[in-house]
Length: 371
Ligand SMILES: [Zn+2]
Ligand SMILES: [Zn+2]
Image 1 (cartoon, rainbow, N blue to C red):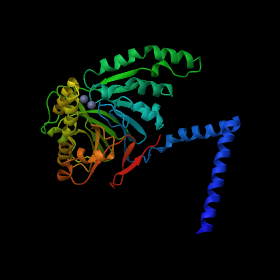
Image 2 (image 1 turned 180 degrees about the vertical axis):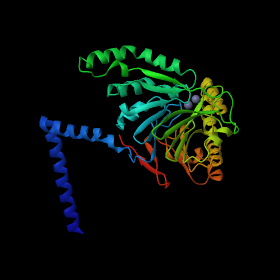
Image 3 (image 1 turned 90 degrees about the vertical axis):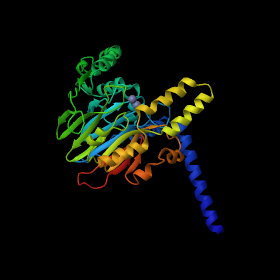
Image 4 (image 1 turned 30 degrees about the horizontal axis):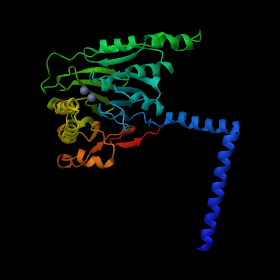
C-alpha cells in the first residue's frame, strides 16, 4: 500500500511539473502560444463535421428550444431539418444564430427558412442568419417562406441591414467577386392556404418540393395570431412535423398522421401560473397578467402527448419549453400527467440535440452537438 502511495505521489508530482512547465512555456514563448492557439482554432473549425450526414436519413437539429422567457440554457425557437444534404430552418428565434455558428453548421448551405408565425421569439434572428450565410459564401438570395405578411417581415429586415451589406460588400469585394450583392437580400415566399379545409378539417398546402423532399404547411390554432403554420417534412418515407405555436388542434393531429417525429411546443400551465402568482406578489402585475394569458394559445405537455397519440407519432419531442427547465429536477413537475397518457416515446428537447430518423425504419438515433 505504501509503495502504491509513493508511485501515485510521484506520478502526480511529474504530471504537476509537466503542466507547470507547459503553462510557463505558454506564457513566455510566442511560438508555443501560436501553436496552442492554432490547435484550439482547428478543434473549433473541425466541429463542422459533427452533424450526422447519412444521406438517406432525415435529421432534425434543435437550434433553439426555449419560450420567450429569458434563460441562459437555451435559445428561442429554432429547428433545423436536414435531408440529402439540404438544410432548412423552421423559425430563427433570438440566440439561435449563435448556436448554429458555434456548432459550425455551414450557413451558406441553408437553402431556406420557414417561419411558423411572426412573433418575435420566432423571427428575431432572421437578419443574422441571412447575413452569416452570405458573408460565408452564399451567392444567391435566401428564400424565406411564411404566411401572408411575410413580405413585410422580410422587407423590414432587408431594409434594416441595407447599410451592413453595403459596408461588407465594399470592404470585401474589391474586384474579387466576394460577397456579391445579389446574395445579400432575402426573398419573401408567401404561402397561401386554400380557402376551404379538406374533409379532415385540415387547411394545408405544399410549400416546397425538390430532390425528394416535400414540405407541407398546415394551419394551426395560435389565435389571435394569424397566419400560424406547422410544417411537415416528408423525405424518402420518413417524416417530421414541427408544430410552431398552437393549442391542441384536432386537424393538426390529422395532418401529423403517422409521422416518425412530432416536434411540439409545450408549456406547463401549472408552473407558468406559479411564476405569475410570484410576479404579482412582488408587484410585477403586468408580467403576471401576460403570463396567465399565454395558456389560451399554447398547448400543455399532456395535450401535446394526446395529440402525438392521435397522430400515431413514433416519438414526441418537446420544444419551446416553457418555463425553461434550468435544473433537471424541474422535469418532474413539467412532465406531470404525461406518463399516464403516453408512457413511452417522449423526449424533452435541448439545444444541440439531433434526432436522426434512419432510412431502414429503425430506431431514432440521438446525437448532441458540441460547440
Ligand atoms: Zn407565438
Ligand atoms: Zn413562441
